[in-house]
Length: 127
Image (cartoon, rainbow, N blue to C red; front, side):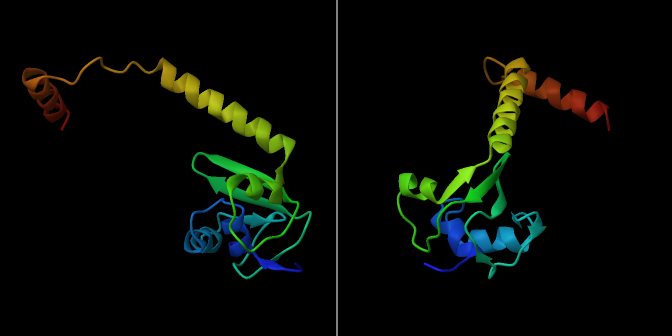
């Protein structure tokens, strides 16, 4: 295979569920190809660096192989290799999110009717 469109490659590599979502992310400037914004019709080349947002994380991957067909996840992972900096940054950010969630005290149960009324009364006082 000589060339594949960027939106098709992102879909085949399972970064997005549909090509429409991949196209929307590319046109929105979220996906960067070799450090610059790209168009959906950009032809992907082997050894290119692509920066892709995935939920809370941002993946920086190097293209290893080209494909325009969506296959299983194990085969899709063979299309790219994540950079070491990206993997380290994602792990660090995930740990930070985990610690932040751990520090927050969640209530053991939902407030009852009297507690809800007290909360609403308190919120109205701030207005």
